[in-house]
Length: 514
Ligand code: ADP
Ligand code: MG
Image 1 (cartoon, rainbow, N blue to C red):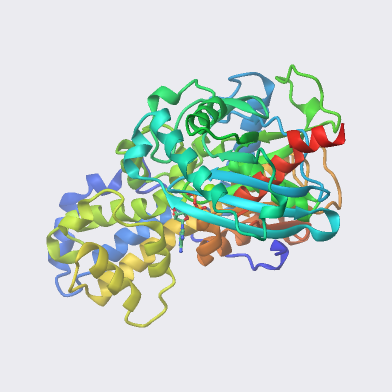
Image 2: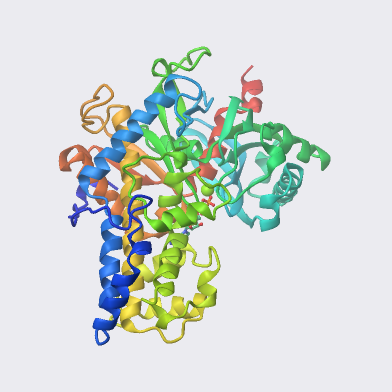
């Protein structure tokens, strides 16, 4: 869709109350609170509403703040490109993707997409410029939680078994195109320092994974060894970040695609950069003169980010405290958890749920983001969906309408902040490459349409998140410039795009041509 057609939203005054760590007002206001509670016995939720208002102000993302966030993102991109370790936040990793797909690719290719909670195995039959994607099939497999904290051998043995099973199940439609040695693209959505398109070492884990022995190891070799242990020959033709897969799928259908973004369990982005704008790159300049750079923007942080006490708590109790600040404010793994932390605080301080904290509310990550999206979309006068979610997840059976209104509002505040900050990140990249009337960075490229391909369950399924994001992009760029930005849902882009990259980097196709 063109974002230019989305109406802008207006904002209330931004205030630092409830922001952490400078203004932990919730913690400091008990005496005043008790007095107010006594005074307002008949208006039992008035104080709660005041707190919600304060929380809204602390979470606010008015245009000037978004501009600062976008500018900080652009500045960090420059730092990360300048030298290895030039930015403490953005790794700005060259993706070693030499050939983005052109549409000419032909044949049967596979992809493995290891994202967050699930991984997907896909097969895609490509028919060249005319046929494009002739057929595709995929299977999704839940990753057993124990494997997320196990050893690299256990993880890759599990994935290899699933891949081998999937390939063995080829239906007749695909069989005539099968190669002796199937080629797969491997989308691995964690920070990896690549050394070629077929090798890379894990830098650190995110999104709830923690497999210590994998750090510093070549994951392609580890995966290939697991496949070998099963006595199979399968070639990994390309190792790609899921953002790069998304960009590749975007490119395949729209040559204006310059940016790939993931908004799912976690979040990240990549973009197409001029190779001579990457001072830290010491390798040969690619023939295209361009490189794909993976920002690893989940680790972006800035004093302008409107953090609250709930963000502090989510971070403190996470398995990677201090890391992935941006991701913890805008991505699917965390939005529900932020809401839960605020509800615990409100319940503990006797503002919600009758003065006692429901036990189930205390369980970390018990409120998944799809549940807050369900509550957020509830427009029934009685807030029936909110009631159902509170009952189903927290066993809160007697919620009042006032309480449900507060929960509903909190969901809205947190998702609005998430969507708008994601928009600031995207505009930060547009500024870096001088697109869409960028104000102060990059060399402006006038009147050029720029497409942004986005994949991920959060963006795809959470309509309000999408709407807030689009509105903020329009606010940041202005109506006119926003007309030249196209935001495209690149559904399953990380998987299909990765199969496309396996095709465009295929060893078999190369041998065939020789
Ligand atoms: P991954 O990021 O693990 O590769 P996805 O792109 O499918 O996987 O994203 C899954 C994430 O998307 C979930 O963890 C959840 O946070 C979010 N999500 C899925 N469905 C919804 C929904 N209906 N509303 C809001 N968020 C959703
Ligand atoms: Mg994914």
